[in-house]
Structures are given as C-alpha cells and as structure tokens.
Image 1 (cartoon, rainbow, N blue to C red):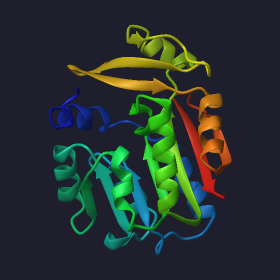
Image 2: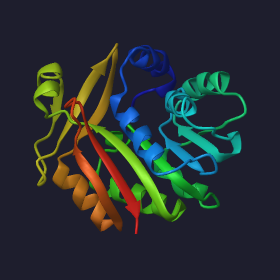
Image 3: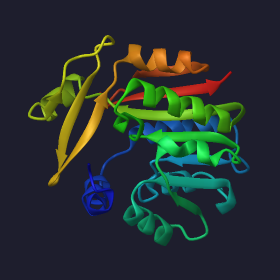
Image 4: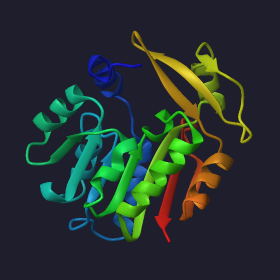
Length: 221
C-alpha cells in the first residue's frame, strides 16, 4: 500500500508547474452561475490545497466555508501553511460518512476519485457525499483518461492490472517518481452508470479538450 506521507513531496513537485485548464473551466462555470462566497465547499483529496489557491484568485472564500480532506498528513501540513485559517482534515474519502453533520453546496473530486479500486467503493462514496450535499448541490470531478490517445502514449509502459471490465474501463499501476500508485481509467459509460445509479443529474460528462482528463459536472436531483 502506498505511504501517502512519503509520497507527498513527489506529488507536490509533480504538480508544481502543471497547467490546470480543467479547473479554469470549472471556475468559469461558477462565475457564470453566481458568486460562491457564502457556499460551503468540500475538497476531496485536496492535497496541498492547490485547488483552494485557484479558487481564491476569483472568489472570496471564508475559512469556515471550506473543508479539505486528504490521506496525507504531510500534504495537509503544506496546505495549512499556505492557507492558515482554513479547515483541513486527515481523512479517507471512504470515511466521508463521518462528516454526516456537515452540509455542503459544492464538492470537488479533482484527480482523486480514480484512486478507488472497485465499482462498489465508487458507488458508496457517491451515495455518501450525496447525503452531504444541499438541495441543488453540485459536484465537479476530474479523472485521468488513461485510454485517450495522448495518455496511451504517455503511460504505455505502465502496468495494466487485470483486464477491461464490462464498461471498457481498466486499472493501472503508474510510477510517479519512485512510487507506484493505483489508477482506475474510467470509460464515460461507467461514470454515467455510477452517476445515474446514485441519483445524480449529469450536466456534463466528457473528455476535456486537452485529452488528459474526463470532466464531470453532476447535480443532486
């Protein structure tokens, strides 16, 4: 099992200069649909708080209205040093039900959901976060599309774990620095099934223009 604390520095370094076109797209969506100053935000797999930093460029986000959760204490130490006054919690997304007293308007899964290693775990996480969402609450999600032409070439030497599932999705073990990490490469069909079976309305679910990620925008019915 990956030690997320040892992985922290490798992860942060790998993301330092990476463009985040998908996040810019989500931000433009939010700008078109009103201010989020008083909205409560849950950032699942927040890492070192990079998403919060991007959001703060455009919105006045109060510390009490943001909660970032992550498995890595080391990444959260970075996040807390970058953003004092904001809430960060060491937590596994599989344990999100423990946040049952929280109510949030917006949930982000930015390159985190694809680390869950079974359909049932993915489904259960979506069911649990649905309970946290307010009426008309929204989820923004990105997942690596490891089967796009761009990523197929980039990760062609990565280990494929097992075979394709019924949706045409695959599991990969990818090396970042000296660490191996599990990734599930979703098909659009599998994501659509997950979202519909857990009661969400799908506003967008597609391969982003840069062909690196699938972006999904889903709303609580």
